[in-house]
View 1: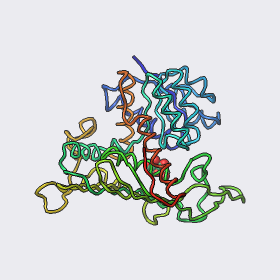
View 2: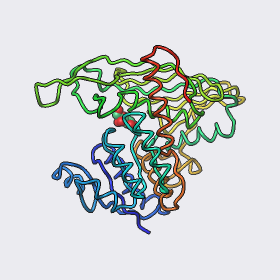
View 3: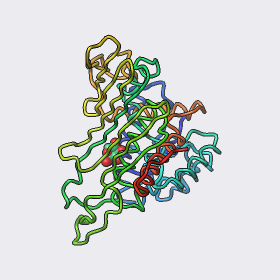
View 4: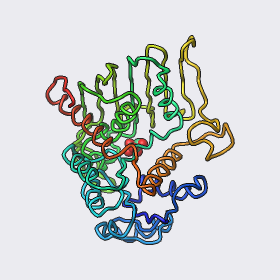
Length: 366
Ligand code: SOE
């Protein structure tokens, strides 16, 4: 059986997923056979160049036609494009893989999760960082109870591409298109990872900030307002009682794509940094401090598919791993995690952070 894949979006995420689809037959021979069938977008000429470059058979400027023609629909457009085509595809019985955050608003994320519940095909939210081998290994340690009772959880996602007040405006600065700023773009990853590793967040207190209110539009004299947050921070309580602090910003001078997770329990701790994604720092029972474990052995998660032991992996491999899992679930008619339900759960946390910031008080999650 060959799965026909239609992909909406051909920029950053479009390339990341197209690269993953191209790598699958080479490195994951047990993955389902797929055809990069149709690339979807609005600008026909840019689309046709992208289809050549990314290896798609055809292009379409009409997603409504495509969702009926393909077996799997990838929604990799800006956030405001996530809800309508994803819901329509699920209603047409087509499996959907959608980029994060699931939607600009909680209401839209709820509608998407409703459509996923009613469909009998997988609906996945593309939280790629779950598929870093070191994160999978961290999860194994946590599931085996090696860290004991979890008490402290920290997650920070730091970037610096908006430090310059003259850096150009983009859709990521617009509430209508993005929903939120650093909170949804970066915080969604942190919230998902921490909920995956530790459990659901049950209550929190959030704080948001916008440092620069308008930005120049590239190639014109115009400026446009920034209507989303530039940074957020939150204190959180997890089911099971762990206390956490979370933070993300686009103004952390010198930090390019610095996502870190730290977890401490009664018997041990672990530290992960995306900038050193082949490593996990662990302190396990009997250790007097942290030791750095290289997660690059052939028995480490996904490593046997790649190179001889010790030959490190990068950011793009996380997309290959998640595509492998998602497409395998589609072929088997099985479940995929993280699903739209996980996307909705992260979205509830994002909305609660905004709510708490507005109200100036702690907020409980249902
Ligand atoms: C931009 O801030 C961005 O590309 C995010 O949209 C991604 O999800 C993250 O992985 C890296 O940073």
